[in-house]
Image 1 (cartoon, rainbow, N blue to C red):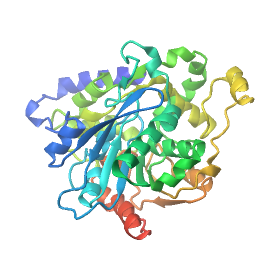
Image 2: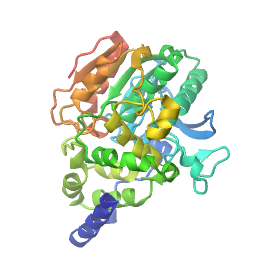
Image 3: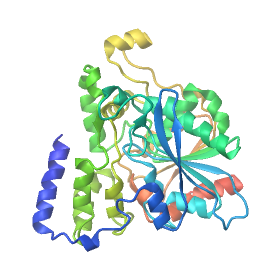
Image 4: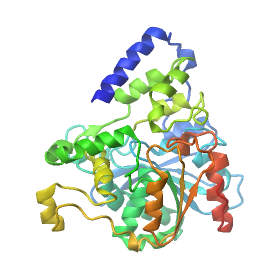
Amino acid sequence: MNFLYALTLLCSIHAVFCDDDPSTVSPRQDLTFTDLAAYDGYTAEKHYVTTEDGYILGLYRMPVQKSCKASKGVIMFMHGLYLSGDDCLIPGPGKAHCYVYADNCYDVWVPNNRGNFYSRNHTTLNPDKDSAFWDFSVDEMSIFDLPAVIDYVLLETNETQLTYVAHSQGVSMLLILCSKKPEYNAKIKVGFGLSPTAWLDHSRFIVIKFQSFIAPGLSLVDSFLNKEVLKRNGLVENSGEFLCGRTDLSYPFCSVLVFSVLGYNRFQITEDVLPVVAGHTPSGTSLRNFVRWGQIQRNGFSEYDYGIFKNLFVYRRLTPPLYDLSGVSMPWVFLGSENDYVANVTDIQTLVSKLENAKLCVLSDKTFGHLDFVYGKDIPNYITPVVLSYLESGTYTCP
């Protein structure tokens, strides 16, 4: 809670020294996925997918552009922790992942995990009244959400495989799914992992360290974890919009005080994009999932930690076992950066060593940060060329 207090205090300081001018607010700042695509000159459809355990997920599609002669295949973009599918549109045409893939004649699909802004629905549970709605972590997202959207997309497109592009937690989800349900390996042509989070031993992100510190204690009060945190239009986002999207002075103020902890590079997330980021993040998750990443930082890329006594009952050991990645046979291309405070290159190398078919590209730009993989101006110079080249020729040059 100290972070939230500090953010609120910063807003007060900002209000004193910065004269807000509504005319400087980006018109793209608060638009939904479909409205954002339309504003940028693209078409997007909204679909709904219901999981085996009743969660109703918002799923977006950007169909193959009318200028294309035919579809080159299906690309699914999966967002990271606390975020949403909006990530693949935020930098704008010519830069954002989904726009670049659509421009290159791919059929683009964008899921949203349970509990975020677009997937805050259930067949029987009310997220505002039923704490059971928030009884989930990345494990349930991996085992229920991801296969539901993969199967839906393949059925809708009459395809047998799709390409998977994911940021941060989105990478971990497919690793867990293919570990637990190996039949999904055959449904993925290739996975591109942007700043992948699995092992976090060397993470420099201060929030990860905080999560790791509190995880053991909170695991002992299990029912307390069934709560919503970091919701869209909540304190953190409203504070972020106030800090980052209101005045000409906001850009240096916000970049120094807020984004630097992620390995932020002010030359990547540009002045026109930063207010849009602030208007779409965070997008919500459960407190259980927040704590879950602290467990992974402490235990390695492991299954859920119930605490010593329940671990003995569930796993017949004091600590949860690591995920068995020996069954993950699909090809992976991971992209990392030396300036990524969340996904350290050493940790990504550990992940690569555990997989049958994986390669790592470490970007030559040593200033590229964790959020630059989805919001940076050089995505079309460093990231999407790797994806497109591999899909066209089976090879790529690490930029």
